[in-house]
Image (tube, rainbow, N blue to C red):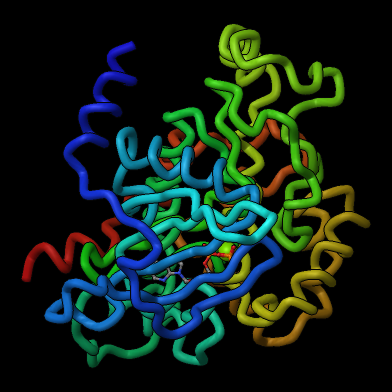
Length: 352
Ligand code: ADP
Ligand code: MG
């Protein structure tokens, strides 16, 4: 009850917007469920050019607005800063939802990963200066550790709120220039189990490159589409039984893998890796055994990185990418993993 009163009061004092308030700028992306633009407020010509982001979404926009409102109140730092969302009643037959966020920055993790300079480009973004240090494995490991920690931190926020993202991939992770941290975006495929919103798994929304083998978030025994009150009563139990949050952990593990192995950063190489892993019954240790004896220097370097400090990185990776959801670490448990005992990059930026 309190939550709804708070939500109402909060909404009352927040500025509301409509279509004519925005001037469209550069197109940032176009998916099957919407188009994303950089925008400015029409009545604020003094405001920085394109300091907001607009997504014009199809019918799934309603769920995305709901998720963003919830994130704003419960775990604001996990995701891009949401401003406002509304239904645009135009002459068109299909509904169009408009969602507005603060513009967080130019680069997604996908952009940064594609650069030859990765992970040093991220080090520069986080620390705010170019470091004149030798390019070493330890240094790379420290940057990657920092990125993974920030991702798990954001995920822990979402999962503690009861939200599973279901579309964790480098394209949906933005570097926020303001906070110098990575934030999650694109809650279009997310599900909130505690209140039964978007309860029916929309498996067609899932990206096969990063999806965990279970594909469906809930097991097949889960009754489909219960009414909202039933879902409210059942969902904590279902959460315990099915551990749907571990779906995001698997995807995060694949991102960890791509950061360690430059050779797995393209779509094609990731798809090929997924095939190899499936052939190994999703056993990373078995996969390593098949590829390591005949692998080139680049792949070998990835294993070397993960083997640093007694193989603690490899240990974490294999605790995230596992066939059975219940054998994967939760975001909270992963954050407590000894891989994160060593100081990351943030400590350095605080010292400045
Ligand atoms: P889609 O449904 O098209 O995948 P996303 O929400 O992932 O929509 O946004 C598409 C792209 O727009 C992102 O990959 C990112 O480049 C950019 N983008 C989205 N939100 C923001 C934001 N808050 N700040 C900066 N860029 C953003
Ligand atoms: Mg996206």
